[in-house]
Length: 397
Image (cartoon, rainbow, N blue to C red):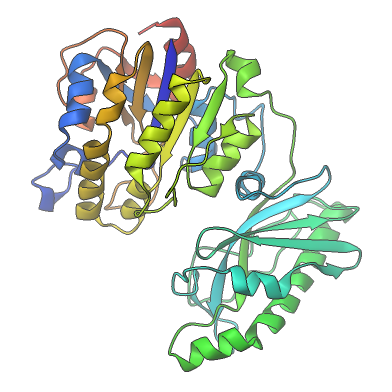
């Protein structure tokens, strides 16, 4: 049996007063999801993660059945691979944002006012070389970018320069151990950040932005430095020929690292304007043809949560529901719908609350609505994310 694995990022939430004590999912009108729940089985997923809260990278890797303590690779690698960068052994990859700092180097906006694209600025700081280390920079979606450090004697054990705060100075990158490699990497990266800032602040485009009353795009905030490491492919682990349909760099990166084929879908932007119907059709066609497993990722549910926009999240869930009906005609296919983690709108950040899941195509229980409240009483019960793939393939619910 084939599997459509649909992840609605940050799906889980908490009751909201303005929604009558319901979560955005509970308050949403979702006749198609409710049909799948009514004809399928439901439950809750407990995310497995390292650290204080589930990151998207950890949450997805554990959903795909990978032991986070065994297969350790930092997010910078996944993001860089996901936007099409080639990482070589020994490279250090970092993800980041093009930010705005004032004349005193105080961070005034972490995303340059959510600039539509950072590509013109990235061109100005491409292929800088410092002390034998080449810096390769590539733009991602909007203000996002990735940096690859290439050369000898590099370490991934360095700190971020981004504390996710404004009104402060960017952090100085520091070595996280006493090795000469970590100290060298931190030192040369700090020099790159200073040099790139000096180039960007003098750039004609930024001078024009300031004249137009816009924020300058003049500083790079970086985090999660990592090196690429061997990970068994999804096919080797589960025996399924797999593909990924996503517009987001991280999720495409996860797919690539795990050996999934990346299927392009027209209008897949990774944001609230993504073409959901086209992604649904692309996923359906992939499964109807040569693939056994399709990872379909939809991001904006999480974005609305981070903004605290519970009405936007509710309406976006309704939008997704409106377009999933083509999936109902899939033959010999399990349809799995869940989230990678919860992102409660009241918190505006990820947390460890369990996430609802429905599985259509392998039995039925008494649940007839897809929601946090209803799914907790489903046949699946509450299971760890790391156990989901094995249960799907062995039908042990």
